[in-house]
Length: 207
Image (cartoon, rainbow, N blue to C red; front, side):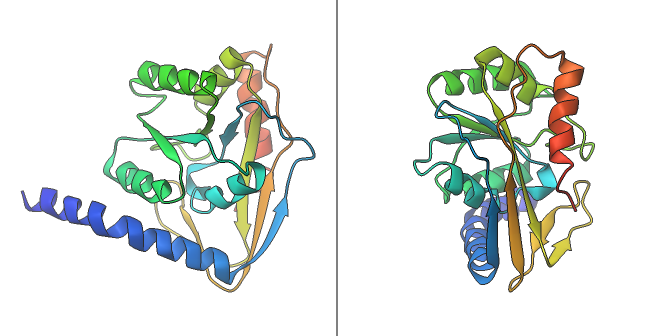
């Protein structure tokens, strides 16, 4: 009972505080954006490692002036916290995992792509292993002929938490380098080859 109460309080108080801290970190840093030459007008799937999640809304804003996006978020407690935080950034969410009970989540993702939403996914989430690709992004991209764009944010100064994903929190008063790849086409590729191609791009900018 006590644990449930503490979680409810955390879900109430942490998201607005977390949102404020993210905005302060962003505003206090120098920003450099490394963007693709071409951005499809059609819905895209953007992927980034779970530990690199914190600042990604700001990179998405650079690619889409009108935000229409849903992010796959786990049903775990930490996922609920993340979902409430990203709602402050006008991101909608799809709850679940592409590895556990994944069919339902994939169906929702495919439907959302058909409705014109971009989809965001952490291919090593929600519980790892770190930097290992799940199938979800490739399945959705191939079934909807959607391009994949890889995101990353490299801070010049940061804290790295002792969690499975080594979650990265940029420090204030440094520099943030945001990277978005050229659109990746995985149509016609075998699953293993498609995952390897996306992972190769993801590993170009990691801490």
